[in-house]
Length: 110
Image (cartoon, rainbow, N blue to C red; front, side):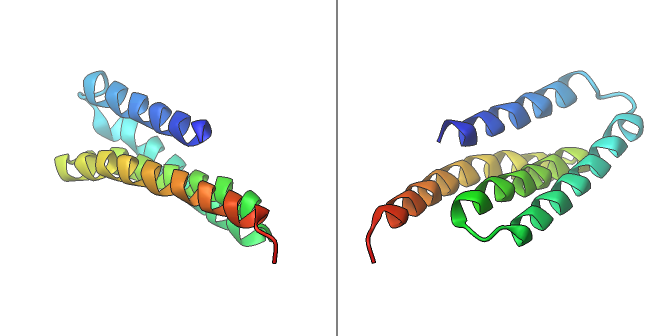
């Protein structure tokens, strides 16, 4: 549960840093972020496709979702940044509950 929160704090810190410090030449700073976000999304999805259990599938899904939030930063419009922050809160709530459901289902016999 804390792993889910820590990824959100890291992405939020990166968003804060980029919106406060790197505001001048966004083509130079945000283009690498766009490529890293795309690579993160693809890596997470390929990792999910290779897994057979839910307990190993969910962390790879978190990796791909971090890429989606970083894509909002790379696009650097007000709507994209609002979407990234909203998605951060939404994903944190949903993923924590999904981890709880998978944990409960793995302990349920049958």
